[in-house]
Length: 180
Image 1: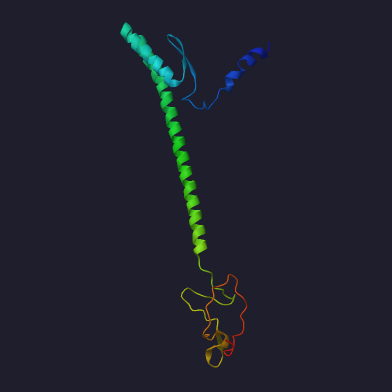
Image 2 (image 1 turned 30 degrees about the vertical axis):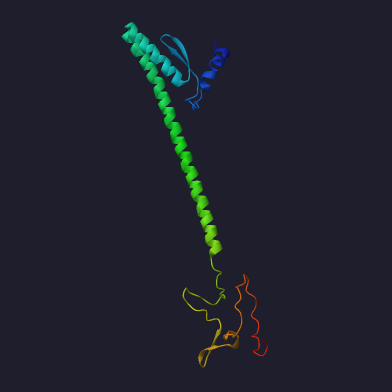
């Protein structure tokens, strides 16, 4: 004879128990203790079992007293475990926020450093300029005497200095001294 599908469907919900019970601290539990059913949050159940334990001790029933204390201890362990998990999550969130804040500060510092950066020296593709080296672009190499100075690079007298432009303009011929 084949097993009945009805019995299988009745037990179907037993397999759907939650693996992660969620927030245990505020969750309401039903506890089936020796004195009947106790319902409430873990802290409420702990308080109830401890009061029942003290009542049993006053009545002289040491076994019931110990039993209530064991039930209370069970819910105390649940509560402590939930508190540890919440503290670990809180620390992880704080660390994540600190990392995000450090990343924002680093990005802001990089932007500020980029804004304060001096304009780069324009170098032709065939010319190398090293730190501390003077720009010899005004000098021309001739075979007979080595480097000579060109008229365009000669120092100009009585002219104002201009602020560097973002994009260099093509060089203009030097102004004649008679025009002033």
